Each structure stands twice: as C-alpha cells, then as structure tokens.
Image (cartoon, rainbow, N blue to C red; front, side):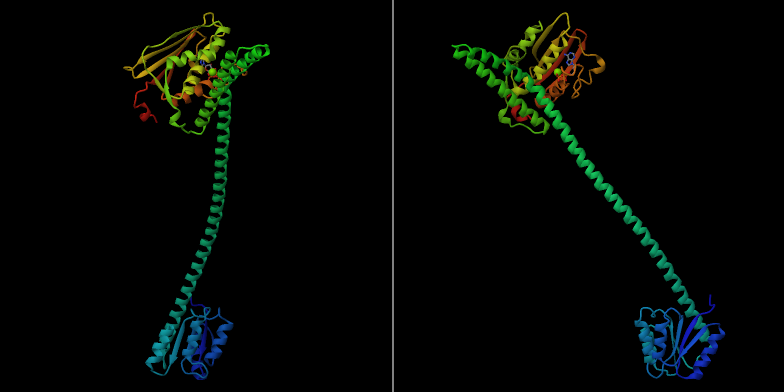
Length: 414
Ligand SMILES: Nc1ncnc2c1ncn2[C@@H]1O[C@H](COP(=O)(O)OP(=O)(O)OP(=O)(O)O)[C@@H](O)[C@H]1O
Ligand SMILES: [Mg+2]
C-alpha cells in the first residue's frame, strides 16, 4: 500500500529538513521541502492533488506552523491532508491549538525516528483509506443518481400514461353519455310514436269536419280535447324518459292515485284501432273493489301499451287472435296482479332472458327497435312493480304486480 507517496516538509532550518527528508525518502516517499508556511501553502495550492501528508515545524519566518494549519483547514481542497506539527517548544497552548484546528499529530523535537516513521505511515494509510471510501461513496452516489434519473424518467412515463388513461376515461364517460343520449332519443321516438299517430288521425278527422260548410262545434271541441290529451301525454313521456336517463326523480306532487281498471279500459282509445284492423278479440276481466295504485299515470299507461302492442304484433299470423287483459287482488289485498295474455306465436326459451335488453328485437328493422321491454323494466322500477312471463306457442302471459295504495304509501315511496 505504501508504495510511493508525496510528503511536504515545511522547515526553516535546513539541517532539520534534510534529516527529515532522509528518513522519509528511505521509506520510499517523494519529499518536497519548503522553508516557511507561506511558501508551503503556495505549493499546496498549486498541487492540491499531489500531497498525502504535511509535516510542519512550528516556529518559522512569515507564517508559523499554526497559521499554515489554519489556512489548510480553511481550504476545501486541502483540508483532508493529514498534518503533523513538529516543535521544540513544550507549550501546552500550541499543542491544544493545533489539535483544535484539526492537526493529525503533534510531535516534540527531538522526535524518535521510529515513532515519526510509524505515525507517518499510519496517517498516510488512514488518508488513503479515507480517500478510497470517499471515492467509493462518490461512485455509489453517482450510481444512485443514475438510478434516480432512471426512476424519474419512469415516473414521468408513468405519469404520462396516467394522464392518457385519465383522458381515455373522460372519453369513455363522454362516449357512454352519448350512448345513453342515443338510447334516450330512441326511447322517446319509440314512446311518442303512438300518441303522435293518434294526433295525426284526430287531425285528419278535424280537417274533414272543417272542410264542410257547417260543422258541429261540440265534435270539434271533443277532438280538440283528445289532441290536447295526446300532446300532454307526449310531454309527460318525454319528462319521464329524461328523468330516467339522468337518474332523477320527478317531484312527488305529480303522483296520484290511479284506478288500474279504469286506466286499462281507457287505453282502448290508444290500441283500439289496431285491434279492429287485426281482427283481435279482446276480453277484460277486472277485480271489483276500491283498490288503487299510486304513481304517475303515464308510467302505467306506457307499461301496458308496450305489452299490448307486443301481444298484437305476436298474433299477426295466428289463426286464433285473443287478447285477455285481467286484474286481480293478491297477497291479502296488498297487491294487484295484472295479466296480459295473447294467443300469438310465443317466446322461444332461448331468447326469454334477452327480451328486456335494449335494442333486442326479433322483428323486421322497420317494425321494431327492441326498446319496448327495456322501457317497461325502467317504468316498473319507478312504480315498484314486478314482471314475469310464461310462454309457449299459442300462449304468452305477462304477469305484473303492483303494490296497492294505502294512506302511508306516499311516505314509504322511495
Ligand atoms: N307477447 C309477445 N309474444 C312474442 N314475442 C314477444 C312478446 N313480447 C315480446 N316479445 C319478444 O321480445 C322482443 C323484444 O320486445 P320489445 O318490445 O323490447 O321490442 P320490439 O317489440 O321488438 O320492438 P319495439 O318495441 O321497439 O317496437 C320482441 O322482438 C319479441 O321477440
Ligand atoms: Mg315492443
């Protein structure tokens, strides 16, 4: 380890310097000699990397040993070089001062050569190990820095991916909003088709009446009221579908008690024309008693109209065409069961699970959109109703149950 190190000797007495030089050179070191502190400091500044040890006398012209030590310890490039102070003066203050300033050793002259040699060797070795540790530390630090940079780079990439994912999520939410907007639009088109057809037919009746020179005012008023009702129904349907799409509730003040038997009879106005043109026999069987439903009339109307329209479609090619609509009281008069039965082609088992899916249809594209049953399911949620179905060729039954209105129904409504 101690191959060849450079030692700076600072000594104003040439004999002393030569003696020191001789001892150290014998150990194989390079020795440079300066005659006072100032010169020594200049040399150290010029060759800061070169020296492994400074051995300095205390008493010298210009800077003494303590001044040199102080200057070295204030210089970042030099402060780690080991420093031995040699002096003939046995002054405690100098001893403490030199230790306080960071001198590595303090030796009194005359020194024992063996001791000087050993102390020099120990200090140089220590310095060398320290330098090695520092270098190793620096390498580790650089490695850490490099790894840190890689990590920072990865972090930046991750954060970029995160931003991209967030953007994708926003896009997806937007896309799903657009999709539900599309479904809502299609749902509205589906549901207002029926009242629009009614308005159209009343309008042509109105025109026929008005074309005559004299017309019956009472008839015109009646038709006008029917058109008004149909328009109100459209407005109510649109309102409910918008509320469904936005997952909102419509104000309770618009809910009312509903006579289901009366409602089902009134619906004839809407599907009556179809029944006649398709030669369908309709039978109605209703429970008797003053039991009411509670909620939005339009919602109930749309549930039954969708089921009845499907029943009429299903019987298009049937030899026997019967539509049975019935209501009965069940569960100790706590619920109403409404049954819509048709003698149509039936629903195959394989598609029974799918009929409530939006846009599922077995009808021709210009005939069905596949939205009726999915809307029925949404409407049923609104009025706490349930639906089930039994079907075979020639007979399909839809069973619907609704809670009967009691005085506290309003309070228990969600
Ligand atoms: N009473 C029924 N008899 C036979 N099949 C039915 C009956 N009711 C529903 N279905 C089946 O369920 C499918 C879905 O019905 P849904 O009312 O949702 O849509 P759609 O009637 O096909 O179209 P849209 O209601 O938009 O005009 C129908 O295409 C049909 O195959
Ligand atoms: Mg339908």
